[in-house]
Every structure is written in C-alpha cells, then in structure tokens.
Amino acid sequence: MGNNKLDDYIQEGIYGPKQTNPDERRAFLGSLRERVILVLKQSDVRGAKGLSELERAINQYPTAQMLMNGDMNFRFFKPYRELANRLNVSYTSVTDRESTTDYGLVLTMDHAVDKKDIFLKEEQPAESEPKKKNFWQKLFGG
Image (cartoon, rainbow, N blue to C red; front, side, top):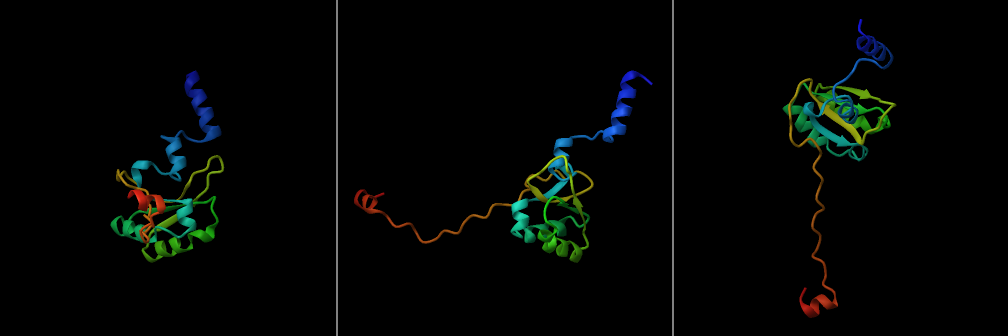
C-alpha cells in the first residue's frame, strides 16, 4: 500500500467512510439537497406547521422517507408521525452530536428529484383594516 492509501485507510477506520458533500448532509439530516422534497424548520415543527404541505408532498412522492431531527423533543413530531403512519411512509430520527441544523423535518427520496422550492412557504399576514391616517397624512394627503 502506498503512503496515501495507508493514511486514507487509517482515517477511514477512525472517522468512518468519506462522504460526498458532508456539510450538505449535516444540514439536511443525512440527505443531499438534490434528493429533498420538503424541509420544515425546527420552529415550523414546534408549531405543527406544514402538515397539509407535507401530506401533499407525500401523496406526490409515496416512496419518500421522512427524516426527523433527533436533537428536538420527540413530542413535537407526533402529528407528523401520525401522518406518516396513515400514509404508509417510513420515518426515522437522525441525531448528529457533532453538528446542528435549523431543520426539524426533511422529506427525502433515495434518488435525485432536483425540486426547486423545498422550503415551507411563509404565510403572509392577512391584511387587517386599513391603517388610519395621522394628522399630518390627512393634512398633506399621504
């Protein structure tokens, strides 16, 4: 064995096999961006947001797998697990003690889907009554 091959062999024995795009895999709970269908941030999961979008995505990709952030409290995932069980989708908890991610749940495939919009759409606040004009706006028309 050459010196480089021996070093690679030792490094692999200590740290495990080399991965492609390790930063991307850490962010997307072990998956690659090109395989991701939908991502919910931790705050979305805590607020039980995105259930209808997740159901739509699962119906569109019935062989998808749901990855849940193992660093979060498991109780937040109850509605998501119930949905996965109802729709026969496998799910697993992923914990990486060496890094953190803002993502709480990732719906992914085992092959590339290259979906452009993978994040939950931000809800726009409903327009309430028009703002009342103050004295200066009334006076000068603003």
